[in-house]
Amino acid sequence: MITGETKSKIDKIWNDFWTGGISNPLTVVEQFTYLIFIKQLDDKQILMEKQANLLGVPIDKPIYTKEQSPLRWSNFKNKDPETMFDLFTKQQRELNDITAFDFMKTIGAEGGEFARFMKGAIFMIQSPRLLDKVVQQIDQLPLDNRDTKGDLYEYMLSKIAEAGTNGQFRTPRHIISMMVEMTQPKKDDIICDPACGTAGFLVSAGEYIYHNHNDWFQDKTFREHFNTKMFNGIEFDPSMLRIAAMNMQLHGMETPVLIGKDALSEANADIENEYTLILANPPFKGSLDYDEVESSLLQTTKTKKTELLFLSLMLRTLKVGGRAAVIVPDGVLFGSSRAHKSIREELVNNQKLEAVISMPSGVFKPYAGVSTAVLFFTKTNSGGTDKVWFYDMKADGYSLDDKRSEIKDNDIPDIIERFKNLEAETDRVRTDQSFMVPSKEIKENDWDLSINRYKEIVYEEIEYDEPQVIIDSIKDIDNVRTNAILNLEELLK
Image 1 (cartoon, rainbow, N blue to C red):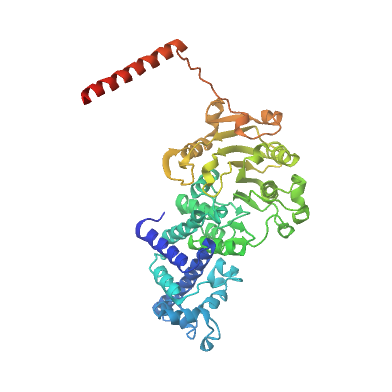
Image 2 (image 1 turned 30 degrees about the vertical axis):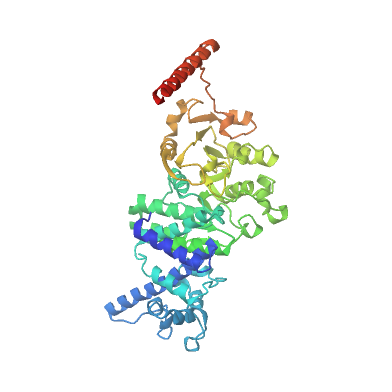
């Protein structure tokens, strides 16, 4: 988490974009991303040059040729604003008719996974003054530290949610961390988010491993797994895919598997029994025509609702034994349609549903007030649900209004601790904040997974005084008030 000077610098960059005429928050993040990438390319070449000079050998595959040196960050950052702007917008004949921005799109594998998604990138900064201001400020950011550069980019992404317009792309970071902590990514996991957005879940999973199992990186086989196949994201929006790629790259995940497809479509039908852990907050609102949906998904639950189709997708793409933690709207838990019931029956009867965490409606404010829950399940294809653990989250560490101010009340540490020790939960009663429900009872209740169906409320009997006693008390108070007024009037005479 960044604070102080670095936070102020990001705020200043954001405000400069805003006052410079770029007010769409996603556009701001995109342009910020492109400039960081261009700086990273130059930083890589500088490191290559230092190593080459140390060894006394030429660079094998330089990113920039000698003729292209004017396109390098270390060169153009010292130019006057107009000259710098021309390098980004006007083709230079002596530079093979390419701009600094277009050069970024030509980078191959040496640019990491981010470079793959450069097609369609557009330079949107319209004035030399704005470009110069942003370049000079980015040049001062601490991008040489892995943790800091990841945190500062996360902070920039958090401003999408603050802006409100595109807040649906952001899952609160502390909720993501809770889900990752509860699933505890393993050394051999193949992790996927089928609606990855800015890759918040994948980044959090990588950070969990980095901070809790740093010793794993001493194993060459794990390092190769971490850097290639461990993290998988699917996202149909090209802009979000570029942002996701940069987010992961800045967190030290240079070559994740990012797929530019609609996860629910026929184009994604080839992914089956692929992943061992899915972490996701798929789109809630929306429906698709049956002919747009990959046919096998409809066999599990015939529906047009995306939140149900994504659950079906997860069951298809998980390996047997694979786990999932997914955020769903409350309607999934108690919806009365055949599709709602069939997906719940599938999870309880044919798979192993482990937990349902009911979250308060304010978790996604200020940009959404929908009530949600987190489902935790394991794909078995042979049942295994004995009891389901329910938890009624009342507080997540932030106020549940639009301000979402930090508060002391926070159930998340308790949720994580109890989930890791479910054996101790069997003695809990239905009046507690968490408890177990047998799968047989869930079946008898039409596969209903809403906590209110099973939670028992204790009504405390309150004894009141007789009406005449209350009336007499009111009269006594009234007499005291009257006497006080009379005394005051006497004093004022």
